[in-house]
Image 1 (cartoon, rainbow, N blue to C red):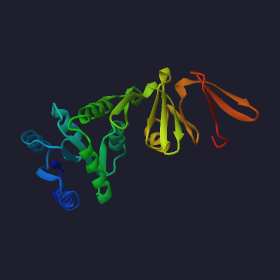
Image 2: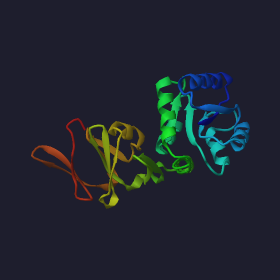
Image 3: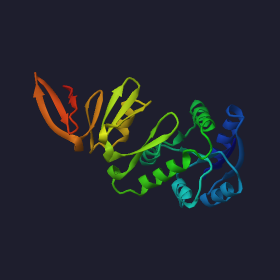
Image 4: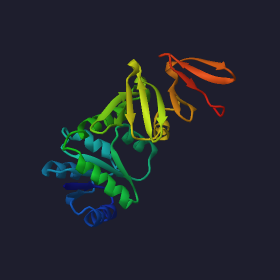
Length: 238
């Protein structure tokens, strides 16, 4: 696979290039750039499979770079120092990211994911969803990407009635009683979904308060009745 690295610090480029040579020898770095403008030029001149993209640049962001490219024939892996807002946006689009300093196991896992994806199968939709999230003034109007076995399903935040934990999986129950099962724990989505809308009423449930019909007590236990008729327990701690 061919890759391009775009980062404003030359040491980061050298480090990532060295890690790829040693741990992902099937990846060839065909170009590097330290500015978004240089990066766009290199991307357009090469047929690549992976773009390793930093987020913060002196005058622009990695998101700005993606905005300027009209079509995507590659998968994007963001490489960034910890930034709550940026990483939240990336997670909403179900895109991959690596935190600096780069962990070798996480790098190998991210690259292996790209290898398994068919070229241009998902990435363009994910990046468009990322851009929608960044441009959206209200998070509740945005979409979240839910990674399934062979697709990324984009769901509106206001479509999610509640989420239920089932071991290491999360079941999303949507309006119309549609259910989507994702192989990630509920705690990840509790962190991701807006706290002003979603309530962790129980260790196994995260509910959208928009769809709460009533709160009542039965046999000394508090329960939530949802508008779709489902009853959800409320733990003592909550």
